[in-house]
Length: 236
Image 1: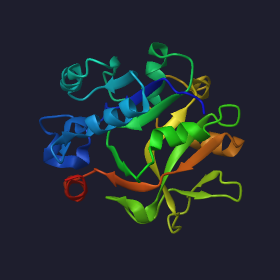
Image 2 (image 1 turned 45 degrees about the horizontal axis):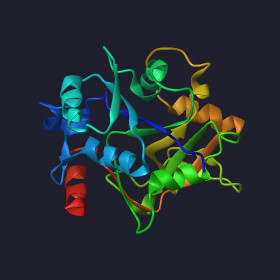
Image 3 (image 1 turned 45 degrees about the vertical axis):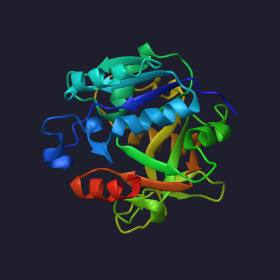
Image 4 (image 1 turned 180 degrees about the horizontal axis):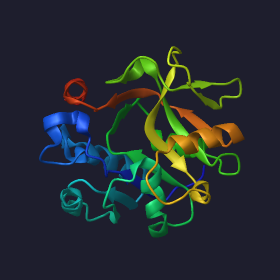
């Protein structure tokens, strides 16, 4: 097992599909069962044993910064963005604030529960091999995912490497769950600017450097008010 000592929470987006829920607050501060989305993330990070966490900020970022002051046992570093740089650009922009070693990346709206005796971050670190992979995605079986469509994002090939669904008509059995392990070297050739991680996923898939871990447990995409209601029922 490779010990991972730092994490990155993607918290810069507004979450427009949340409608009225993000008029007065950023999406990471939307509550599910009385608890902010970002607090669920931090609970997972702390349970794994990480204290160093970088958080990118844009829409109403000061509210997130203030909210996280309650965690006196955590070392937060903030990466400010004048305009949201998306997932790939946001991480690239913050790398100078982080150590040059592997780290977890968690979408602030990724919400999951683990099966008894399991812990996603520990289980991912257990199988992470940076000689073999540059990134490893948490994939979620579609039948245990809530608040998303039924088509999924990825297949696994015969050697358990992920292959992204490219045809609209295809149904893939797994979706990307907004959690990954990343080595910073994947950004060496990437520019500064605004772009999604998906183009990095695709590049690594082609070169055989993209790994996958199948999560055993439930996963919720809190992407709109209806999906929030579904998550509320589970976490209450």
